[in-house]
Length: 145
Image (tube, rainbow, N blue to C red; front, side, top):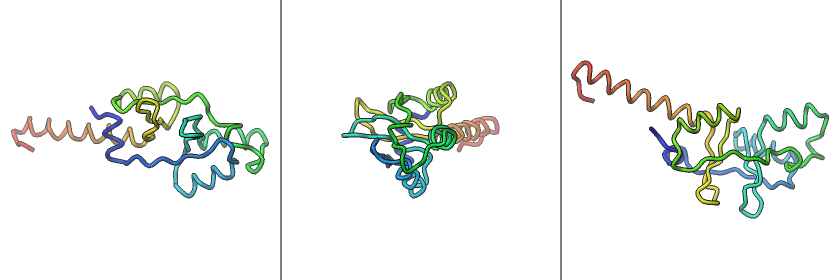
């Protein structure tokens, strides 16, 4: 059973953050440039919220706001669900499913150390299952792998 720390060791700990005072246009440009679906909203090294494509679609487009006049703090999700490095992929999947979210910031103490996505979690779960299947096949056939 893999942990969040193991996922971060594989994928890296690159974080794309934005200030709450930035405009939605600034956020969307950064997301496009970095090819990510969410940005962590950080001020003075403190996690203030998360801004995702979903926040944009539901709180700008559908409400008739403009990307130039709306700030990240106006529409970000401020009640951030996060995980700790020792949590398992199964715990993350359950949390993401229950809360209907796709990104989980990773905090160690109060320090932001990474972010994982639903894709990262699914990839790790599939890898674990493939490993188990290979071992079971080897056990059944008597072939050591």
